[in-house]
Length: 461
Ligand code: ZN
View 1 (cartoon, rainbow, N blue to C red):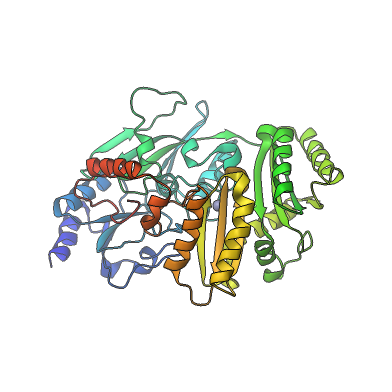
View 2: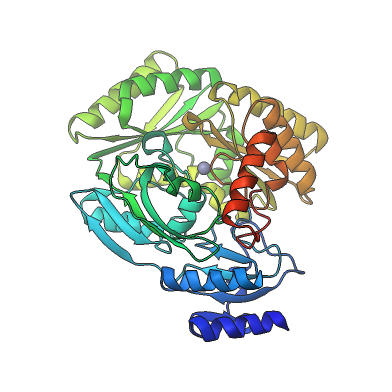
């Protein structure tokens, strides 16, 4: 009853077009992310679609006064349940804050509202003669606010870093309604605490990001892509060193795929494999060069030497943009797992790069011993020490699988989250990767910003 009153009062305060009652909202959209669905015993009280930071502020003031939990949502491409309510809450969607407000050519920056979709950022940067490098499979839905809140990674971290490196400034609203304008455009600014860093990767637990200043880069003038096959992980490491030395800062991607995953991305989807099935490991390499004449020639020379020196067993260089996209489609096949590798349990971990080969071998053996018939798929941004794995069982015991994978990860000194965040899915396992003192300090911050615990509760810590 009180909750119904709450939505009514909120409507009177910020407008009935801004706050929808649950009965009038698209609850199906707002109750799930890419992999997780809201529990049946949880209710969405209403959905707010603010257009300005001032409206976000008014909404948070009301939520704090009535101690109503509020769950910020972007494009809902999360894999770990970050935007899925776990208790009866108001959903705060950034869907209506999509504007690109400014491109500053001299500063090399783009100022956007938090609901702006990644693909729009990439396209607008391109049209203005710049390059926005962050890229991932969810580019058509993922929003800037969510990408910042989760410090998203993706396929070009090796060269350009994670989302954190591309954020120069933000505007955020605290749970008490305070609006922090920190829309810095400068690369250098050491005037006190760098407050934006607190919100990057906080998964909406400290406040709501409403705008951001993004860093733009010069356009690469030559993109060169190849698929390679190697016999084993030792050769992959040697090849990684060789490519880093040869290409330096031009190396844009170094993506490894183990045979189980390569098979899923090719023959399981009725696609002709560019390199035959049967090799030990497959690698997708891409350089982003500055010289359209010289870069492709050097690319071919360096890769050719890999064959001559016995590092690589086979190489296919993409001869067209179409071939390049076909290669990336193999790497991006996890987006199609629902067609042939389902139900799946998905993991995103980081491990010391040198240990990843051994981890895959031993983890696979341990999983198969305990769950005979389990399907596995391993791939990763190896140069970023980031391994992904998906497990396929007809009737998966999620908690038991999680525990097995994360205990293994902890034993190798790895992290239970490389780029997907913690959300609600990994919260119970945070202690595998963070010390008690680190977790206590996170709680201290959380309490200082959000003493009533209304901001995206049950997430991260
Ligand atoms: Zn990834």
